[in-house]
Each structure stands twice: as C-alpha cells, then as structure tokens.
Image 1 (cartoon, rainbow, N blue to C red):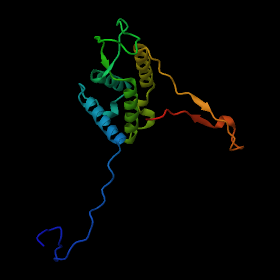
Image 2: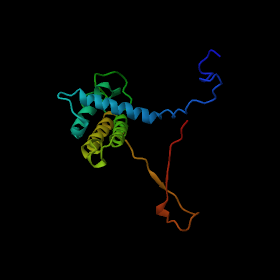
Image 3: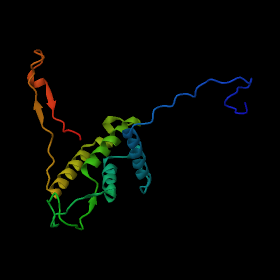
Image 4: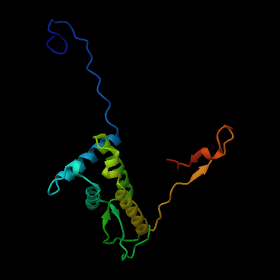
Length: 180
C-alpha cells in the first residue's frame, strides 16, 4: 500500500486505465514534419531572415540548390569521360547532388505541409510552375548524365467483359512491378 498508484486518497485501489495514447505519426507524416521544420530553419538563417508569409518560389529554388551539397548521387558533367554511362568503371571528380526523385518527393511533402499550416493552394510556393520546371530540368540532366532516360509508366487498356455499361476507354489497368 506504499505505492501511490495503487491507492486513492481514501485508501482504496484505483482501477482507472491511463488515457489512450494517439497512434504515432506515420513515417510520411514524420518526414513531412522534419522537412517543414528544416525549411523553416533555412528561411530563418537567411540574411535577412525570411518569414513564411514572404516566402516565394525563389526561396524554394534556393533551398533545393542548397540541399545539393548534401546529395549522394553522382551527376557526371558534360566534360567527364563517364558522361552518359549508366555504370562508370571508375571514380571521377564530378559533383554529388540530390537525386531528382528525392527532390520531387520533398516538394510534394512541403507542398502538403504548407497547406496544412494554413497556406492557400493558390499561393503555395512549392506548387509554383517554376518549381516544376526546375524539377524537370534536374530529371533530364540526371538522366542524360547517367545515360538512362526516365520512362513514364505505360498504361494498358483493359478489355471490359464484365460491365456492359462501362465503355472500354473508361477502364484503365496500370501495370505495377512486382516487389520481391
């Protein structure tokens, strides 16, 4: 009876379970929060500091270029003997950059976080056309440097024998690669 959790003020045993804990955030939500905080810190470190309300697509582009210094993807330059080779046989001095797919996913998370923090979709700097152009240029540059073109996933038409009310063109089956 010396344990304070086992007794109440009246000396009787307490049977109240602790309040339920909310489930932990998903990996995506955790990453989105970290990305949002990192971007906010980046804006604060600018000279002069930039408030989120004054942030525009140019700040986002500068942030993406800033992140390149932490990249792990070798992007061969035009003068490099390995330019255009998917599996170069040796090392070179070409820079490491952020991979296009990582930047694309980052922008998606920041775009969602901006709106979750009260920003309007119309003023979202992460959804600006200049960001899409930049990402497309990074994608094309990295594809050429590696000698591997990025290909869009092809959609296969599915013949509809089951529902006579649905036209063939209304039903699309997407081929998804097997995960092993």
